[in-house]
Structures are given as C-alpha cells and as structure tokens.
Image 1 (spheres, rainbow over the protein chains, first blue to last red):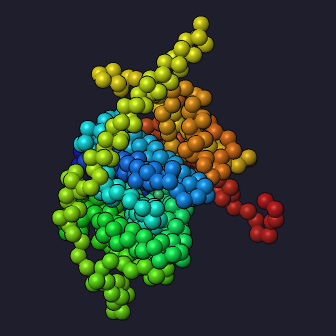
Image 2 (cartoon, chains in turn yellow, green):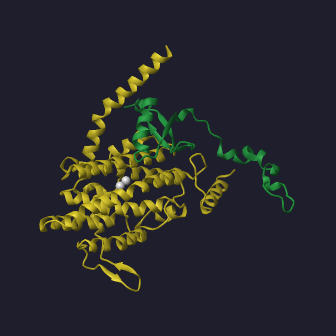
Length: 312
Length: 98
Ligand SMILES: [Fe+2]
Ligand SMILES: [Fe+2]
C-alpha cells in the first residue's frame, strides 16, 4: 500500500471513531506528537508530586497526612500509567526520563509555583486537579487506545484529589479569620496559573489544529478553560472566597462567565524555565534519579543472580 | 551511560482479575527487575482501591501478537461461515425454548 493510502485509511479510522492501537500503521507525525504529549503529561504527574510532597511531613493532622500521602501516591501511579502508554509507541521510559532530566522535555507550568502554606495544598487539589480533570475527561476520548485507557483509569482517581483539596479550603473557611485569609491568599496565587494550565489560546496554539484533526485532542483550550471557570467560580462563592479577577461577571446571554486577561508573558516565562521553582523542581528530580541509581542496579543484579542460580 | 538502555529493568504486561469468576484483563505495563517485583508493583499501582483479586505479570517480550496489516486475510476464514450463528436457522412459528 502507498503512503497516501495508509494515511487516508488511518484518517478514515480516526473519523469513524475507531481507536488506533500500538501495532497499527500511523503517520510518523501522529506518533511523534503523541510521544511528546503523553510523556509531557507523565512528567507533569511526576514533577507534580513535589509541591504536595513538600507538605506531607507538615500536614496539620494524621488524617490529613494519610490523605495527602495517598493522593501523592496516586500521582506517581498516573505517571506510570502514562509512561506505560507512551512506551507502546516505541520510545523507552529511560529515554523519556533522560529528556526530562536533561531539561529537553516540558511538563505542566503549574508545578513551577511554590506551595507556601497548608492552604496551597487545598488550592492545588481543588484548582490544579480540577483543571486537570477537565482536560483528562476530554482525553478519555482521544484516538490512541492506550492513552485513552490510561485516562479512564486516571479519571476514576481524580475526583478524590479534587474533593480532598476543596475540603481543606472548606475547613479553613470555617476557621479563624487568619485561616480564612490563608485560604483566600492561596486562591489569589493559584487562580491565574490554574487557568494557564489549559495552554495558550487556540489561535496561538501551534499543535491544536492537527491534534483536533487526528482526534488526539477533542476540544480546544479556550473551550475547556471556560468549562473550568464556569464550574469553579460558584464553588469559590459557596465557601465565601473571592476569585481574584475584577472583570469576572456572569453573562446571562451567553450563560457563561466573562472574565479578564491571562498574563501570557508570565506563562511563557514559566514555560521557558524562568518560573519561581523551575530550577528547584529539576534539581529535585535529578537528585532523586541519581540517588536511586544504586537501587535500580542492585535489583537487576539480584534478579540476574537468582535467574542464574535457578538455571544451574 | 552507554549501556543504560540494556540495563533498564524489563517490561512486564499486567493482567488483573477484578473479581472471582471474571477474566484477567490487561491493564497496562510496568518495569520490574523480576517476576515477584512485577507482581508487587502491579499491586501498588493497579489495585490501590480494591480493583484486584488476582494479578498476572507476563514479560512483554514473551507476548506474540497477530499483525494488524494482515488482519483481513488472517481473520477471513470465519467470515463466510454464517451457519455458525444461531440466526442462520429459521425456526417454525410458535416453537419455544430453542
Ligand atoms: Fe494525576
Ligand atoms: Fe490528581
């Protein structure tokens, strides 16, 4: 079959809502796009453990500590599901991790912001996981089978993340004025970076159109961002928090919130490595990887020794 | 670093039976040094909420798959045997339990 036939057949399959599976023929660009997107997503899950891990030892009660530990453990699992999906495209996990550690791979800009107070752990679960859920629910219908299945698995676990975060803020808002102020401060700092999680506006997004044609993505960044805003603003109001956007206003005619302007300059700065915590995050990942090297080697040496003994 | 790729832990495909009486179903893969570690890691990543009753770990390199490009010809023998389906047989009006 010619390359054009293959390409046409592939697009037909995608248009017919049939999933693409690992051994199917696919355009080289589709594969490349997916490896990039899925590995970035995996890196985000892994790096995303750092701002929350930062508070495990300082959680205000044993109950909160157990919850946070379980949440962070889930994120490690999400990283694994996603690396596992990306590997089906023929790129090794070590290769993807090398790229991250070499600073060549991206991860979500949100994790380059610091988690300064306990309320930030609430804001992360509520806003960051909340935004991630909207993106991930859309990706459950992505055209690549293994990616779609990983997303279904992840989405089943995210609702807990979202709720435990909101629950932290609900509790703080019912507390002392200082506690409520802490919750408000966390929302003030995390709101705009959370909106940036959906990526650039579709008109400025280089990969969007092709991704939509291949049904890797099913909805545009702006549409998803609006869903997030419409869902989240009433949740803030319900517990007496104020979203830090003077232009935010319900629009009766569109049945959506109107809202202000994202500071795209800040977004690009963070993406390019100049966010408040980029260097710290990368240093932490490199240190963990280097310090784990002997464990990886020892486990393999032990497995080889056992296998030899069994063969003898 | 040159030998790193060879030194990577092998890849295992994981199958989970969610409940007694059901099939083991493929859930994904993971890297592990040996079979025992594969099963234990599978427990930690794929059954954190009681999703599993039994786990199978199979080395990915031990799985042999049919080729999607041959799909048509490969599954062809089943296509022209409509008499394998019960709907092939018209039943007389009024017959019961068949
Ligand atoms: Fe996650
Ligand atoms: Fe999460």
